[in-house]
Image 1: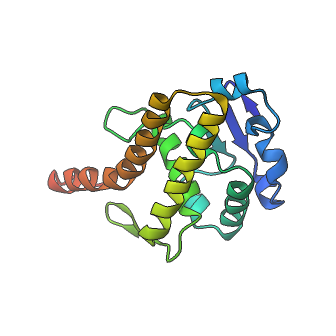
Image 2: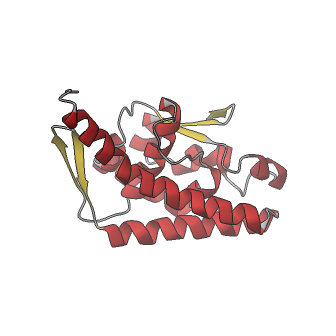
Image 3: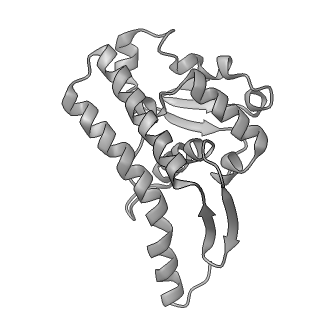
Length: 186
C-alpha cells in the first residue's frame, strides 16, 4: 500500500511471502513512466511491526521475503528516499537509510549481530554486500535510463547510494565514542 510516497509492507505480506501484492505501488511494469519519474528517490519504505533494522536482516522469514522482493523488484536504489546519515538528519531520514541497508543486508552471508555497550555490533561478508549494492545501483541506472532521467541525475543517485551505505556503517562509531568519552550511558 502507498500514500503520499509512503510505501508500507505489511507483516502478512512478509509472512505469506506475497511479493506481488507488496510491489504493486512501485512496480515499473504497472505504473506510467511519468509516475515512475516522480517517484525517483522519493519513496519512504516502512515495514509494519519493524522497530529496528535488525528486525529485518536477522529474521529468517523477513530475509526470505526481502530476497524474493529483490528478485522481482530490484529497484530500491531508484525509488527509496536516501540521505547519508549525519547529526542533522531527522529520525525519519535515519529510518529511511536503515531500512535501505536492512534490505541490502538480507543478501549477505556470514551475518552476525550482537548487543554492545554502545548499541550493536554488526559483522557480515563485505564482498557480498558490495556486490549487492553495485547491482542495486546498476538496476537504478537501468530504470533511470529507460524513462529518460539525465546522466547527471543518474550519477548523483549512484553517489547517494554509496554515500548512504558508507554513512550507515560510520554513524555508530563517532556517536559511540562521544558517549563513552563524556561518560554518558544510553
